[in-house]
Length: 277
Image 1 (cartoon, helix red, strand yellow):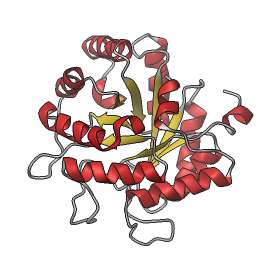
Image 2 (cartoon, helix red, strand yellow):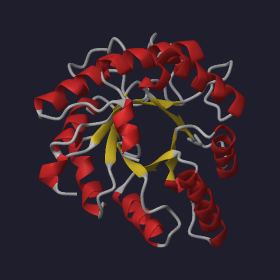
Image 3 (cartoon, one colour):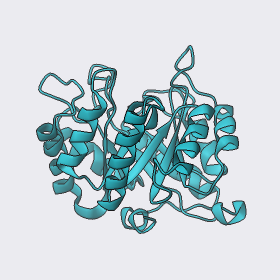
Image 4 (cartoon, helix red, strand yellow):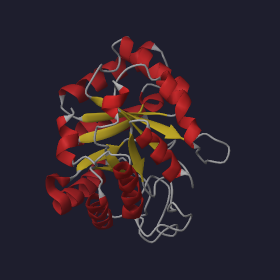
C-alpha cells in the first residue's frame, strides 16, 4: 500500500476492555460480566472505538471459550450498541484450550469478527495442523467472519506470509495484529519493537498494534504515525499517558483518537470498518 495514501486513511480503534487474566481487583472498571462489558463497550465506542475485542468470563470471572457464555456477552454488547460496534470474539487459548475448542467456539457462534493467534491455531507445520488450518480459515472467510490474525514477532509475521503463500491462510479479507512486549522479560513494550515486524510484513494487508505495559500510548502513536490501526485497553495496560491509573477503557481510546486527529487521521466507524472487508 502506498505510504502517502495510508497516512490519509482513517484509523481503526479497537478496545480490549478485559483480556483473559485481569480482574476488577486490578481496576474497578474492568468488566467480567455481560452487563459491565456492554457498558464499557458503549463508553469506548463513544470515545472513538469501532471494534470491541471481547473476552467472555465465567461465573468465577475466569476466561472461557464456552459458547453459551460467549453468546451472553455478545448479545449484551449488541443489545447495548446495535450495529455501532463490531464485536470481535477472542479465541485465546491461555494455555488451557485446544485448537479444536477454539474452532468450535467460532463455528458454533459465527460472530461478526474473531481473532486468532496463528501459533495457537496452526502450532506446527505438520500436515494435520496445516490441513485443519486451511479448512477452518477457508470456512471463516466464506462465512463472512472478519478474521484478525495475531502475530507476536517478526518470525511470526514471516510465517504468516509463508502460510498465506501456500494457501493455508486466505489471501485477503482479514486484518493483522502485531503484539508488542508479550514475550519480553519485563512484559513491557517499546515503540521500536514494531519496526522488525513491519520490515517482515511484505504486502498491503492492514495491520494494527497492541502493546503491553506503560508505553502502550507511545506504541499506539507510533503505529498511527506509520499508517496502522491500534488496539488499546485494560487487557494490556491500566495507565493513561501520564502514568496515572486510567479512569476507564474509554480514556485509553480517547487518547489514541486525539493522536490520530493530530496526525490528520480520522477515526473509523464500525460501518466503515465492515466495508473494508
